[in-house]
Every structure is written in C-alpha cells, then in structure tokens.
Image: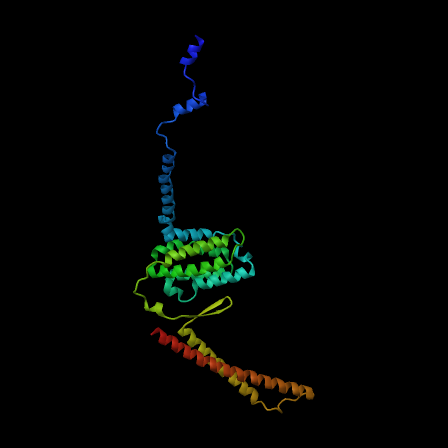
Amino acid sequence: MASSLLLRSPLPPPHSSPFTLRNLRRTPSSYNPNKQTLTLKPFLSVATKALTESSNSPKSLDPQFLLQELADSFNLPSDYFSQLPRDLRLDLNDAAFDLSNGPVMEQCGQELGMTLLNISRAWESADTLTSTALVNNLPPLVNSLTSNNKSALGKRLTSAGRRFQSMGQYGQGELQRISKAMISTGKLLSSTPVSEETNEESKVETRMFKFGELQVELTREKAYIGAVIGFVYGIISWELSQGIQNIPEGTFQYANDNASLIAQSLRGTLLVLFYGSTVLSAFATIGLVLLSRELKSGKK
C-alpha cells in the first residue's frame, strides 16, 4: 500500500524551493529584458533635447541679460584692482585701451562712448568701485543702441575680455569670470547685422597716441594748436639765443681765469640749447601742419 502511494504522488521538480516557486508565479510570462532596456531610449532623448534647448535658451541670446551677468561679475571688493600685481595691472591697462581706443564716440554713440571712456579711466586708475558702478549702467543702454553701436560694442568687449583671459587664475577666479562674461556678450553683440548706411563721421580716421597711461586723440584742431605752440616756442628760443650771442664778451668782469672759462662754457651751452630748440620747434611745426592737412583731406 505504501509503495502504491509513492508511485501515484508526483515528484517535485529538481532544485525547486518555495522561494523559486513564488517568484515564478509573480513573473509575467511576457517578460523580456531587451524590451525593458529599449524603453529607456525615449527618456534619454528627452533629457538630451532639454539640455540642448537650455543652452540656446532665450535668456542666453538676450544682450541685456548677458550685460547684466557681466555687471554682476564686476561685484568685487573695493580694493580688488588696486591689489593686483604689477603685471596684471599692465594687462588691465591694455584691456582699458582695447575697450575705448579709436573713434569710440562715433562707433558706439555719445552716451555709451562716454561710459566706455570712463570705465577705461577707472581701470587705469584701479578704481574698482567706479568701475562697478559704470558697468552696471551698460544693461539699460543696450535697448537704445543701433545695430552698428551693438556690433562695435561687441568687438570692444571681446577684445578687452581676451585681455582679462590672459591674466590667468588669480584670487578666486574673478578675472576669468569677467573674461567669460565679456567674451560671450561681445560675441553675441558683434554678430549683430550692421546696416550699410554709415555715418560719414565714422569713416574719419582717428589717430591715438599712448604714452604710458596717457591716451591722446589727435584731431585736426589739436594738430593746428600744436603747430602754433611749436611756432611760438621756436620764436622764443631764437630770440633768447640771439640775445645771448649779442652780449659782448668784455661786458662782465670775472674774478679769475677759471670763472671766465666757466662763463664761456655756460654761454656756449645755452647757445647750443636754444638754437637746437629753435630747430626742433621748426620741424615740429612743419610736421603738425602737414599732419593737420592730411587729417583734413582724409575727412573730406
């Protein structure tokens, strides 16, 4: 009887356990691991598309928003520029020159051009507070600019931003944040289409002379003024040299021969000095007159 019961009862499957049987009941018959992997692709494509759209967001293409980011990057300690090393101060002066050199008023407009000039002066004098206040004035000005003004501003910001970029890492990376903001803003503004109609004044070639931290814009009027000053100085030098030469040698009495030799040597030195000044004044006057005529013809 016991043997017949053993023959009738089915044997359990090999290596089976309650846990295995329970898992088999819960696993659907249509389960396919490959299908589950493929369902991740739509999510990946959506995430990639979102990242791409965020890089081209409307804010990143808004000049006013980028200029505001640039202004925020200039929120520095009040003595930041004055504490820069000497080599970085020289790079800061070069950035100031790139920002405002040439006909800045004609290219950027009166208000923006004056703002850029004042920013350059603040950088040259290492005045951080004034620089920050002036840069904060740039975002409100962008809406009143023409396409030509925006393009000119963009080129100046890009050039000055590269100067900041060349300064390398300093402090907490403030200079690199400034350079990144200036270059990105400059590239966007410089890509503004420029209208074919240009003002005749913007075609005037303006020459700049730079002596250390001093910048002088040479115009036709300044050249004429310099020529007049040189001419007057030449006349004065000529009169002084003639007055010294016309003094008779026997007019003065000297205590000894050494004093006489010193007086003669001094007289000769003064004659050479004033005659040389007369000649140099004549050359400077002629050169400035020719330069003023060249500037006048270039303006026409």
